[in-house]
Image (cartoon, rainbow, N blue to C red; front, side):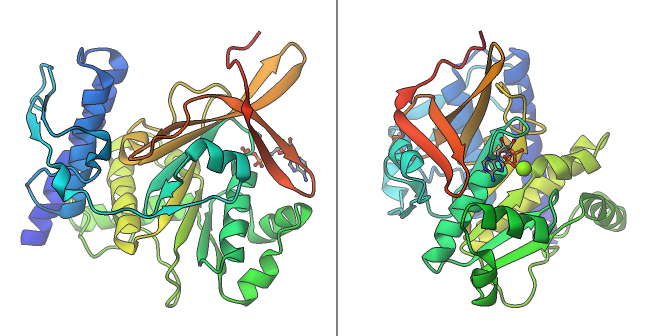
Length: 333
Ligand SMILES: Nc1ncnc2c1ncn2[C@@H]1O[C@H](COP(=O)(O)OP(=O)(O)O)[C@@H](O)[C@H]1O
Ligand SMILES: [Mg+2]
């Protein structure tokens, strides 16, 4: 019963986060966006700790003071921030030289990072590259693919000189093909059985055997969300479960989302980007009859990353190349 209540609480929190995201988008929240981000961050910390006590875990970016959110909704609250609770953090490098320069310290280990962009912007290639680099370091990687088949991804990696077969053989790499409609049907059936709640011990993804990945790649959240069309709330329950599950595993997670070529929203419902610790945008900008690639680290909690949009290209036999000193204007001309 206690576990069920905890689940219900977290569902209420996720709904509040979603509502905040929507209100912010609609312009009905007048407070500074950073304050909203802080509250959502607190919600996430509460979800992670499973307690009712709101404690900030990434006080590096938030000074020790009381933050107040000025808005009409019931979420208006005061949040106490205690920097002494900050755990020492480890960072990982992506192995993509230019991206690591933009990220300065790296990606906090265990973070969930959204990689978003339009179709053909290089999301899958960038993820496969980060994964190939991690496998070379002996890190166990799991690639959850909802769009392309495993043989296709293996071929794709070979084009860039990344030997996935070797890593599958030595046990560092696992591809797992998921059908978004199966996920939707399973979630629907469980919700019907549990009268609107998903039990805490239900796993949103079944990882085979005793494979414990250090890094997980989801390609893509957009494919999952497409199966939940007309069921926004059910999708949100599932996504919250997924983020919590990854957090429990302790893996660093990269979640691909498909957006506009120059996005203003970075995930299917807008909720995911609030749950995520980081957002990296891949741009494909039209310049007359050409398209220019660019990349930006929009957010990375607890990291003083560079804040600029820089040039990127995809090179056959090599992969994604990022030029941190070549700034790009995002606006199409
Ligand atoms: N072998 C290759 N060599 C160079 N560029 C490639 C290669 N394969 C794909 N590309 C480029 O990458 C784009 C697709 O990248 P991908 O990561 O699949 O995009 P998405 O963002 O849709 O996942 C293609 O449109 C093409 O421009
Ligand atoms: Mg793709």
